[in-house]
Length: 304
Image (cartoon, rainbow, N blue to C red; front, side, top):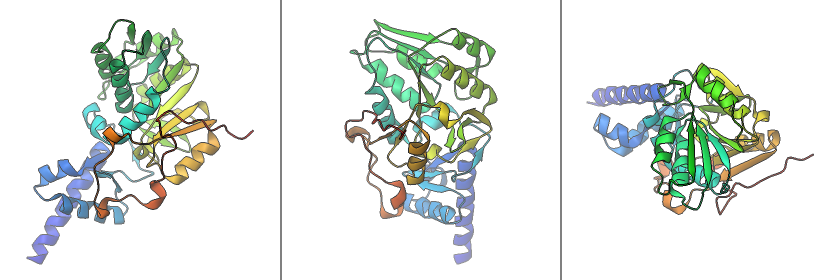
């Protein structure tokens, strides 16, 4: 009987690992349904995989370990559900600094999609113009509660699995535009810069940065240490990074040292994660409090 239980645990862990490698992340709630076991069983399996260095535990599931080289990008529906509370907090921080009359560019992505939803819901943020290569983002903006005064410019291009429009047409159209600020979502972020698995998307993201007076990167803590195939830009080309307050302390120190400005977002009450069991608690060095109680990005000037 013990041998059977041990085999079943091994099989479960192999399935969990396969899900993380395929999608970049796996949620406890999904695994409970798929494998027909309790959430505590799944959490124990994830803990075993984490101890072996095969995954990294986060609130609600597991992600690829830091330093993982990702060559496949998950679809939009997978990405938008992963780290939902953290992405919502980051979007709120970015939204708090927007003003009527601005023109901004939003790259295709799940966190920028959350920002687009806030823009769509904010009737006071008019007139306002958004340039985007994200089909889902354009759809969210077209459903705005107060569409009058909200202009949406959608680039052309070739559609990717994550519903981004990329390629020469998208790059050329962005080259004709100028915006106040670009908000960029990334697949991976580390000391070497911003990356994505898609070569064409990296080029279009660079074009999006090129048409902006300033660039803000919106990245939840699970993006840190992930390295995609294609480089988008160096860290020095970014003006601001907004991350959630679960970002590793080492990442925050490096970003503060390398960038002119760095901001951390604290989860608002209506998007805060559910209470976790002790087995799901983040390590001390990754759970520093956020520095923006009102969710406005805090500015920290780089020493001269």
